[in-house]
Length: 300
Image (cartoon, rainbow, N blue to C red; front, side, top):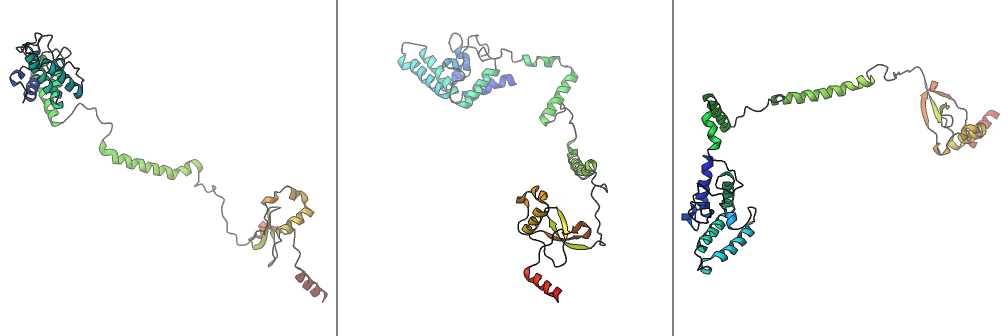
């Protein structure tokens, strides 16, 4: 049983190869209140000691502290230095056994576990009889006993029936994921119509390809912000000529403009519908050679 296996297992494992195997069977029995070796391990006295008490250290002591305490006590109780003390040899053996157990981490861990869960420990251990935790088994009904057996079987098989039901079946996870993806896709497709009515025929201005209106050659007048027609094969005026013309004719229009934003090299020309252009208000002077040829032709 669990309450009895721990002391026997620790005694067999820790005592193997110890300096005093004959005394090891009683383990802490030699540390009773009287300090003798004949203590009854089944009935420890209230003042029983542990290996930590023998070495005069705490249960949290490190290996360096255990070794230092062992050396100090071994020198103190060595039989060669205590010839007249009959108890020195007994105490020396106790110190050796305590150090043999606590110096090895594995043995020390088993010993600490034994102190915690068995009735051989110190006063701070549980003072409960080993059989007390099984007394309720005698009061069980046959149905309760069968239910306990079934619980043990499920525990051994790794099965559990006391868990709360799952909020949803894991096998439905792919369906939920695909449904969410298609839902987001549908919302993204339909959202423009729901909020902005982009599918409405009047959302955009209608485009008409009217070929009945002829295209004319025109330049953009930056002062009046309009397109002005030009005769075929005619060049638009230079920007400085156009600005000089408006300074003479419409100085208030030039004063409203920022000259830094006006074109400096040449004006924009383009073929635009005739209805979108007006007649040019300024025509550049022809070059001198062209003017002389025109005058000679008119004189002839």
